[in-house]
Image (tube, rainbow, N blue to C red; front, top):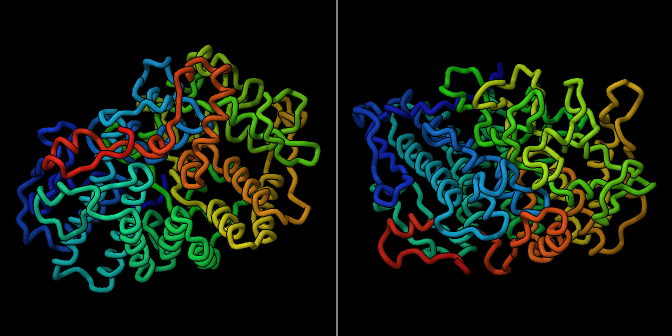
Length: 558
């Protein structure tokens, strides 16, 4: 299939010398040291074994950390952490009792004992731990090629930056552990040892170190480049409101060999998922010898939309609010009135690439999406995910359990970098540059292949998308337009909630959303967002119980 960096869990059996501290799922072994083999320390520092340890650090990027098939509780795509808790999506599935803990998340009733809160923490700290151990082994290796050692160290610094970035944006005040950790107890750290600014500084330092030594391109596409490190550094600056730094970082990335693909829909095909628009991605593969296809999109397997071609798991369901956001006016610009779309309305063509809508053809299957596909239609409405669902005809899709795909998850794509630059440009007073950047995104959508009617008679809906042709002079208006474009372009990709939080508008947007959506979907009746609390998830209770009493401070409100 794809020529990618192999990320099987090859560390199993590598040995006790790695001191692999699994942050387990039970309180009594949350910091338990687990031995996976009997390889001596001297063997572990041989180049081939160090490479295996490095691959082990990559292998948990997809959120799969054990032999269970529930990476959907720690998904790399953050579909539950970034979409379901926003105005973009509902949990879906077979009613509110199906994965009820995610239902509680969408009601903002998360607790420190919520399973997904614990599972995501475990997966990310597993990534941190493996990265730290690989750095130590790499440093200790005497037969590892010196030039390659520098590059591999950059890769590991990048990976650690990624894992900590995810932890920071989800849990905010987190324990920070680096490669100086030697024992299990070294991982039992306070989450207030460093201030928020200091934590961001440590994440920045990893990406800067990676940028300084990584090559501009890699032979194996799963490995990060210097441009990927700079792009992630730009994102780190963006989350802190460091606008000039973010702007300067995007300048570097835009000097790389990246571009928007001509067709929006083609971006989300496995044949293209290491193409010119993808800066860094979690590499997925199927039928590669890994048991249960755990190297596939295991964290997203519950998104299967049902119907005659797919399993009817029916999670990650688009909200009516998101559907309505794609409505356009006679000029092809967003209306954003949250009035339900009618058949005669103009709509952004990205709507029917992103979302399955009744009466619109679904992929290349020769069939119209029907509301009967929607599991628990009465609760969650008729819409289904589409953008990151592969055709059931694709060789990159598994039609049997666990129903996974080999479509990579894009952690950063070039369109997002352009939107980050537009954001920074607005804050720096460069409104016309922001308009030009947003128009680039909209022009690509306008020039893409639109979804066609089954009989070939033309477009499947009244698609109309235009560019902003009037000079932008009002910063507030420009800011709103950039944010709207960000929502439309990145919908269903796991970013929405985190963007609302960093923009400082989560409370206002979610309150306005719930005021209307509760009348549409009664499963949201008890939803209530508390400002100063629900912007972040709680520190897992099992971690608190596993360390010295008083060492951890719970996040506000929990």
